[in-house]
Amino acid sequence: MATLVNVDGDIVPPAQARVSVFDRGFLYGDSVYEVIRTYRGQPFELDAHLARLAHSAERIGLAPPWDAPRTAREIGRTLAAARAAGGDPAPAPDAAPWNVGEWYVRVVMTRGAGEIGLDPALAVNPAAVVIVQPLPAPPASAYVEGVKAVVVGVRHAPAAVVDPSAKTGAHLNHVLAVREARARGAHEALLLDERGFVTEGSSSNVFVVAGGRVRTPPLAAGILEGVTRGVVLRLARAEGIPMDEVPLRPPELEAADEVFITSTMREIVPVTRLGERAVGAGRPGPVTARLHRAFRRLAGGPPSAMLG
Ligand code: PDD
Image (cartoon, rainbow, N blue to C red; front, side, top):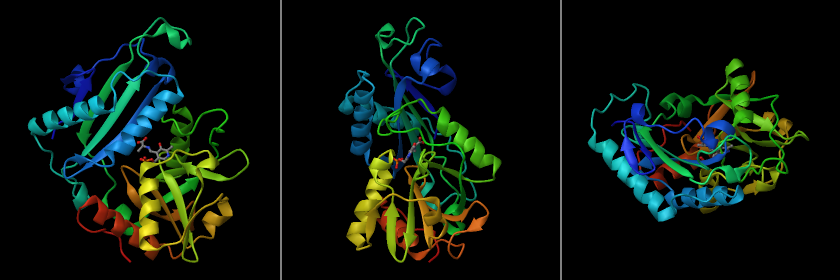
């Protein structure tokens, strides 16, 4: 399993992958991207990711250099080349079994290089990059014990300022949120909006369980429409678990029986500590575990490692 990079259709090792220092993705975060992962070597929910990539590009007026079928083909070509390159690293001793041998896929489309200046018309050749690498997924212990999250001081950008439905390379706010979370020994940063409502994690969506009902902020809270969030909403419906999309405040996180986060890389990870306090019993809870088992069945791998 080798890390390989596809730059505008040329597949090269990482050290040979080059984009210009005049690229607007580098200079301004003027780019869109998606993170996709494989199960049994196949990209999961690929159509949803490609649709969101097209939406993101449309929202910032970037003409995608590849359409969705071409992007899917380039992802497939890059994965095949990386698989063929061999040299499989030994799996991490604490890897969750369903993540071994799987791939992380990042697709980036930037407005391209041009004369320095904010005017997007200065760049006329958008660039496309696909990075594939062995999946850096959470260790099995994250599912068995849960992780710590903190509500950080960094606030989520208001939807009227930064469109949360577009997944762009302008990420400084969330970088600073993660910086704060790490300084407090936490796995994930949870961001509030300017009025104090819970929005989302730095790279995840957040859910609480209270009295057997699952709650998650609605899209109107100014959040990314996570692909995994969508899968979890569908699974909850199929499992008959009541699910509400409602605004949440920090006290509802603190009083919850269970909290969990979702993202492509993490699936469903229980949050068992919020700052210095335990969530519920301080262990992954039964509703989180049930949803994760359903997710694992859907993704077609071995069962959830979560207890409960
Ligand atoms: N991040 N919210 C934000 C701000 C995110 O960046 C992400 C994903 C999510 C979860 O979305 P999904 O379920 O589609 O992965 C929510 C990706 C994984 C990343 O930037 O690495």
